[in-house]
Length: 296
Image (cartoon, rainbow, N blue to C red):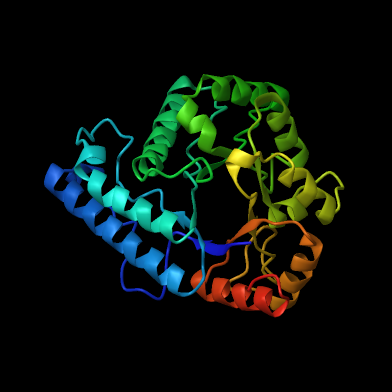
């Protein structure tokens, strides 16, 4: 098991997701911003290694406007050496890496231009990991998309779009069950039709399910991962007390986390903590897992 957190490290004095307004785009500003973002990413990864936080979700914003037509800079070639260096660090320290495109990435939209833009964004994020020379265990995490008043048709559009994707994107793509529209059962159908692995979200499953007990749901999601996909990934969080349904906690609820680790049993999953205070909760989670002898 590897435990981690997404995108932002609140301890360090840098960000890997600096951006600027589209109207301010210049090649000079773009290159300076991307260089700063990659430098911070290196610092975050070093912090994570020093603290045994071996799972990290890289920010989608590391290369601002990379999938926009305004960006004609060959950033992959310009930063090839930097990205290869980061990739070597990731591999040498056995880190697990993922990315999670923003919600505007929708493969089953009935609007062709939205699908086209979504594929372009996936291609950019996939390129980051490809230039880093990471293998197919580094994943791109998306949701099923919208329903648009006809869920079966929407799911078929997802399947059709998936089948047309370039192979390098297919090898990295995983689908996550969400808390409103696409349950684990829906994702299992998408998997059956495409082979896409399911990244399981325990909190979303609590919000939207078809009666599957948590232990069974975990096993069903994990069974969709092949050897080349690596250890199954999952997102972990819990409900914020007294807040709207679906709002994540600001800090890890230690008793709930211990109980969840018991639900995992012998199942090995790399766990991304979607909790507001990021690495603070991740550090607590690592210690809890050690106390339970699930980590050395």
